Length: 203
Image 1 (tube, rainbow, N blue to C red):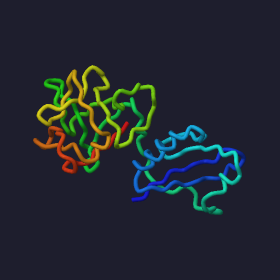
Image 2: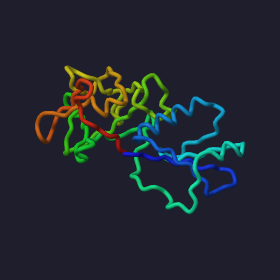
Image 3: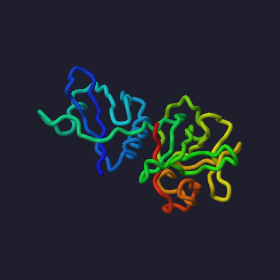
């Protein structure tokens, strides 16, 4: 699947757009993080898939292939903005009615259709106000949004809320967490690379 992001050239030419195409949405986020290292580039991130850029030289703006009278914006679903310090629900990519829920007793985290818990997710050792876009190589920590003192950790491979946190790769949501157990309340476990299922963050 191909994913696209749009860059609007801000000075004068309102109709000018650049299109960035990538294999998936995660690659767009990694592209943005790489661009942030270039301090001289005047680019702003307006949303996960829309950016503005200010170019001072005509030759800079002339790159790429011009499409006249095009069909407009390419159709693709909107996506969640993965900003460090934000709060999210975690749900199954293949079963969207299945959410992570933290039990009040014992603190175990289950995948269930009966309830859901909102989590704050941020890059480890980073200030929540940084507003950094999280990418799969980032080490992140999770805590309960309603009580930041309760952090996500692992106990015998099972996820639970505890006062002591473990850090995870942000990319673990793609392939390191697996739900298993009773049909209506499955314990979420951290498994070996590639043996998990895909989970997504939603608002």
